[in-house]
Length: 83
Length: 295
Ligand SMILES: Cc1ncc(C[n+]2csc(CCOP(=O)(O)OP(=O)(O)O)c2C)c(N)n1
Ligand code: SF4
Ligand SMILES: [Mg+2]
Image 1 (cartoon, rainbow over the protein chains, first blue to last red):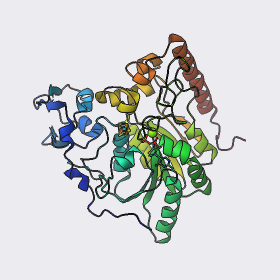
Image 2: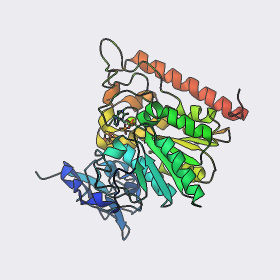
Image 3: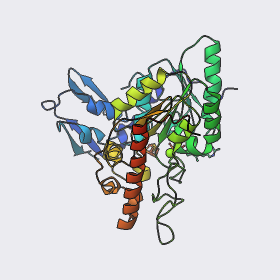
Image 4: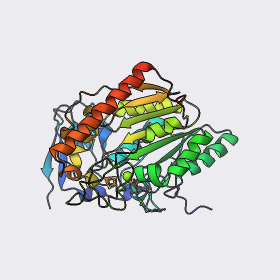
C-alpha cells in the first residue's frame, strides 16, 4: 500500500521562503572570488555561482546568514530587510 | 534554485544543519539512490504532500522503521538487477532510540545499505525532547536545567561503536562543518558491500539556542574541541581522520542556550571526559586492534 506519490520532483520550489527573511545577505561582486563556500553550506540551496560570482536567490533565501559567516574573503554583508 | 538532489522552498528553519547535511550526503551519493527517510524534521519540512524538496527517489517511512524499509528496498532492487545506493536516513530520535531495534536488525542481517544518522541531539520536530543522542548536561524540554537537575544526566549513546559491534564493515563519524571529509566518507561507504553507518553531526539553531548564522561555526567547534571526534572504522580498523587542536570545550558551549547554566565544575567534568575518551581512541588506533574481533 502506498500513501501517495509525488511525480513532480522538487515542486516545493513554489514556496517562496524569501518572505521569512529579516536580514538580507548582500554579495560584493568586487570581493567575491567565486570559491563556492557559501553555496556549499547554504541550507536553502539559494546560492549559485554564475560567471565566477555568487548570486543569491532572494525568492528562497531565508536570511540565516551562514553565507556571510563562512565566506573566506568577507564578500558578504547583511542589511536589515525593509518591512 | 536547486541542486541535483534537492530544491529550494522547503521549510527547514533558517540555518538548519540537518538539511545541510542531508543535501551534502545526497550530493556525494549522486542520482542513483533510493532514500528511506524516518519521520522527523527532514520529513515534515521537506515533503508536505503533495510537495517535496527531493529530486531523487525518496520514501517516507514511519518514525521507527527506516532501516527495515531500506532492508526490503535493497533486496528488491538487487533482485531486479539494480545497484542503487539504498539510504536509510533519520534523526537521533529515529535511529538511536525508536528505530534502534530496526537499525540493529538491519546491521546484523548484513543488507547492502547505507545508514546516515543526522544527529541534532534531540527530538527537534516535536519540541526539543531529550534523546539518547542528547549530550550530558544539555537542557531540553524534558531535561530542563534548573534547581532539580543541570540538564540531561547521562552521557550520549555511542552509536558508532554499537554499529562496529554489529560487524558493520564501515562505520564513520562526520560533521557538516567538514563537507569534504563527509563526502569522502560517503563515497568510501558506497564502494563497500554490506551495511555502512555514518553518524553525522548536524547543529540545530532552534533546539540548541544559537544564532542561525552559527551552524557551521558550532559544527567545526565541536570537532576542534575534541567533543566530536572524526574517525572511521573500516573492517574493524580504526583511523582517526582529524586530530583536534583541543580548544577549551567552553568555546563550544558559549552562545548555546542549552548550555547556559553550565558551571565551571560541570565544564571541567566534560573536559576530562573528552581527554579520557581521546586517550582511549588514540590507544586503539596505535594498537591497530581489530575492533570487530574484540570479544
Ligand atoms: C511512533 C511515533 N512516535 C512519535 C512520533 C512523533 N514524532 C514525530 S517527529 C518526532 C521527533 C523526531 O526526532 P529525531 O528523530 O531526532 O529527528 P529531528 O526532528 O530532530 O530531525 C517525534 C517524536 C511519531 N511520528 N511516531
Ligand atoms: S528544528 Fe532544528 S533540525 Fe528541525 S528544521 Fe529547525 S533547525 Fe532543522
Ligand atoms: Mg533529532
